[in-house]
Image (tube, rainbow, N blue to C red):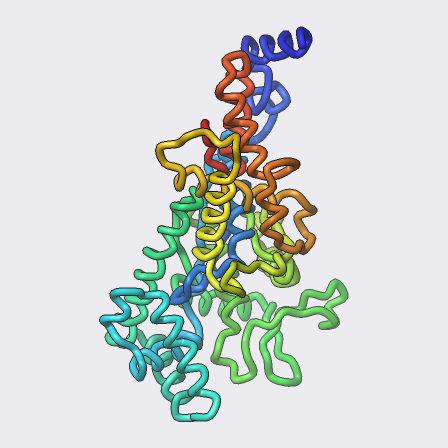
Length: 406
């Protein structure tokens, strides 16, 4: 105990020698880091599947910021494509502005489900969807007005969820921002002789080392007019960010299924002469399996956060060691979210893991609940105030809001 006390005293007296202020970081190059993460689709409630990208991306951004980097947090929304033609046509048939005002994303979700079901047996709806998206591409006023309404209410709803998670973004971007630039990228690929045509008529970029088309990435569909949206728009977005922010590194945080997409994206950028693509990185992660609430299968992240808070509140009320609190719901929310975050970081990043409420909310072991309990207990002991501060700073980098009483 005496030895431990001396270590703590040294830590408090010479704290400039430890952590991010340590001389180990003196030679670390600081610069501008762009981190793209979360990236849900507009006109849909925040799906629980986007939780991992949000948690991991937020941690990377916090860590880079704590090391002195200028961090730009980008939420690159899925806000373009034929699905919005279907949603626009569906809203014109089944939508209600009053319901959209009262419960916007739930109503849009209901409309989308209904129009998809109707479109299976009704070609007229498919034609209406294509017509609405054509109007959107041609920037016709009514179609654009409706699309903007969908986008704005979605971002407002998402910001409420992000607030609960303690996450913020500097930029809400999206596929819609880069449609014109994507056309220019295709033209540039043609001028550089990088765009080739396959026997099927599709426009591709040859990525094979031997130049024999054994490996390629599709950029244009066979009609030569309709862009393969994800590839060309992502190229345009990357080029635009470099011109706009002159970043030193850019990090994309998505699930591992997109690994090939980003590998090809970086290869095409390098082939176009953008050497900075070597400083772009994809951080892949595994999937969460079996995430459910008491009501059954989870679709929306709000359900998960509510469930975590509710379960934690019940656990706290049943525990004999729980301290009396002014706002127990607020503490339960913070501890419940801590449990979700710590669970996400426990295993290898690239591995899938099975979601288990009982294991996640355990009060002992390597859990977010025990981490919060340890912090709260240290806060009550004056001797450990220095350790408490260090622990709290580490928790904040993880994206966890520390509680002082529980």
